[in-house]
Length: 206
Image 1 (cartoon, rainbow, N blue to C red):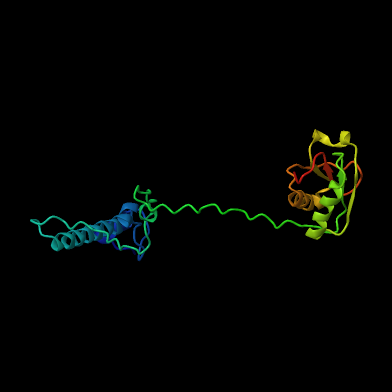
Image 2: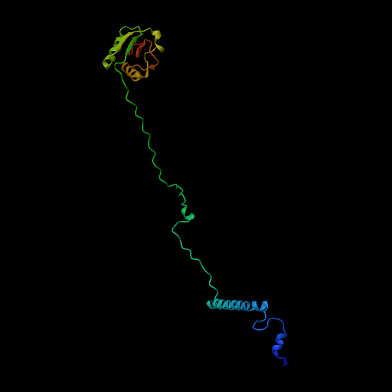
């Protein structure tokens, strides 16, 4: 037979909804998030306070905060401005170098061909003058000479002249003229075909 007992605290709990016995009622979401959030905020405040204290303990309020300075080490290499060396301008007192005096060009020694063909031709009409001039040349060392006559009309300019054919005998023709005292020496060929021809319009010895 069932007995009636007065209601107690256990009867009150039995009337409430939810698990009964060793199971606990479920916790709300904010009760799970709030404790770690509070711990995070408190830790941040503590860290900020320590940093602020360390910062203010290193510098005195009466002294300005030290400004960081950068040390520049000079290098041995010259800068762009130092590497440019200005060119010194010439001064008026510069010593002038002496101008070398021009040297005279020595003329080559004349080439005398003593065996060149030399004809002495008489166009003056005076007997024996061609032979006399030929002898002068023989005495001077010429070995290939000949004396003959020529018509005075074939003597250019009507005066004594030494004609020669070719540059090879140019010096020899000049020497022949010097030996005989004749001033005119001309190139361009000879009327008789010899290398050098002495055309006499007058007697060179008078």
